[in-house]
Amino acid sequence: MKLISSKKITIAVLAFFVILSGCSKSHRVQINPSIPIHNSDIGGGLTVAVKVVDTRSSNVISKWQGGFKVRKFTVISQGDLKDIFTTRIRQGLSMLGFSPKNFNIKSERSLQIEILNIKSRY
Image (tube, rainbow, N blue to C red; front, side):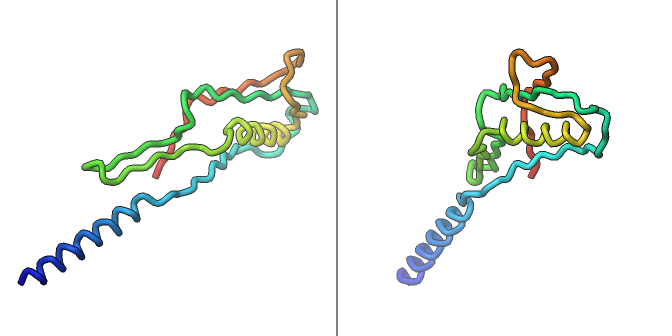
């Protein structure tokens, strides 16, 4: 009788650890912003200096914690989000007919984008 109950306890403990280890897997999230712009010649070839500033306090994109603090995860960006957003904004400006270039203090026209917050949905 004791042998059967100890087997059940051992199986239950092993099953618990298997389930717990499945919840702690590492997941990758790809940040791929899109800008809904159609080709246009509104820019007329004007040069625009582009600068993206990340004003967030940390690289944490999302945090979630389930009941009883059993399941939880945090999404943190590995790379610099400024590069991703700069590339997309330059592509959008090019589609509008502008000629984007690197930011310079002496630039005649400049566009500064500030990343204030990033929201995520699951």
